Image 1 (spheres, protein in one colour):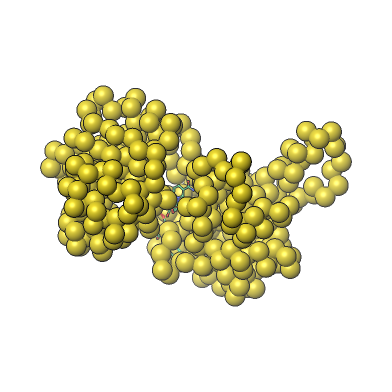
Image 2: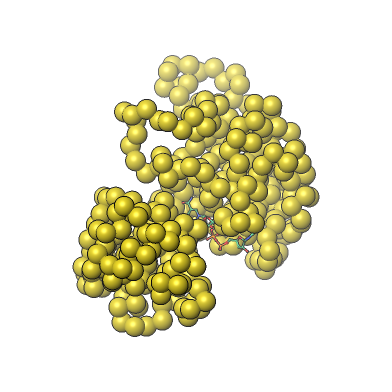
Length: 336
Ligand code: NAD
């Protein structure tokens, strides 16, 4: 079956090509993002494979459906960039990779938090510059901190477990309580208590209309002075302008981001020789207590192998007419 893969990078191609022989798909790799202007590249492909910053809005989906596409295999967990209502009305099935390595993302969140707390990003540059002063690099013991985890699904649960191992008190907020978190002593509280008591908060809930700008001017004022916030989930969970204001007035003591609201204009490309036009992002990068990585939390060998395997399997299920267990729930498609 012909599959057109958008936003493909050499690393995607390497993992997918290595594992494809046992599936036998005809893979067509396209570097362009998927959007209404590029959807025509998939003409004649029954299946399309897309990634986090592709634009799967109604216009794109209509073009894909018109070109004969019936199946969208997202090679990521999130699908907030897919217009599910439009997919449903066009009869498109959407599948994803629900869990490829929750460890990869949770461990990256921990790495960001530890780096930020102990100023590793600043120390790295100082030492390379022959500057061995430790002035300004003082951190806090993580042991004994209260850590807030918003969203205790597959990633948040592991983050909570790691932080418990550090000797932290872990508070959590989720619409459902995870038994494993409960058994390790995580205490579920409402957002107000989590905001008021946490020394650091890590976001692991999906981006939905309810969670958009969960961190904004009002919620920031509910937090401790000097709060650390880590976001490896989706950029839209944080109102970036409000975060910048909170960094300037000292409320926010540290901000670590692997995702950014407007990342689709920036991330996954080398923009080092151009002029970045996003003033909000550039302001963020001027602060010493802001650490940004470009959506790489998932990027481990293990995760890439799992993403490739599950994606190729999802495509094989569709081709064989089997019910794919990783379908995103639409009213018209079988539940996962
Ligand atoms: P998951 O579905 O296993 O867990 C999400 C949890 O959030 C669930 O327990 C859910 O009940 C909870 N939740 C939903 N709405 C909530 C709300 N309003 N308040 C509090 N909790 C709420 O998902 P996961 O695999 O743990 O992934 C979490 C997020 O991480 C994904 O949505 C995705 O956006 C992001 N992610 C990022 C990367 C990366 O590379 N940076 C990689 C994978 C996933």
